[in-house]
Length: 219
Image (tube, rainbow, N blue to C red):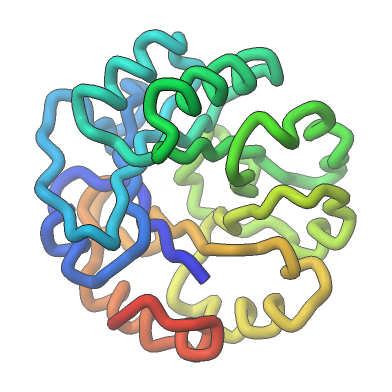
């Protein structure tokens, strides 16, 4: 079970000491968490920097990957299948160690036909809550909808997850729809302000049973 802590800006050094698998750095001017122009600290070997992009031209994405030494790319916009496939192929050729994550916003009436064509264009999907912004809306979606997920591509669960959701997550991981879930992505529910993470709250979350029972990544 992987943990991705997204929306890094003001205190990534404090967060990295908690031992997450991934730290998300957003490169999009439309959010107060925009990391552009800042410097990523030297991360531990077991923590990978993920760049988050929203409908960014492919050449810009690849330039930022090289500039910041990113180990992953997360696409959080309306990127088409053709875009994802081209970027995935470019990454496989230029930097095969870099993973690609494609996010989808799920809300009432969501149909997984929306994902048709995307399997094979990325390493992971990420399922987030539908809201006004591409991400970081701080709301949960109905995880029961994931029982209709028809693909083999593993996914990360996101969307308004907070420390009070430990019991709900425990129950979720006992359901068939959690079979392809390989990690959790958290952001706004663990913030003092946008981009500044609440370290005590994250520590409490890491003490949840889910990490102990799903192969803990650390405390």
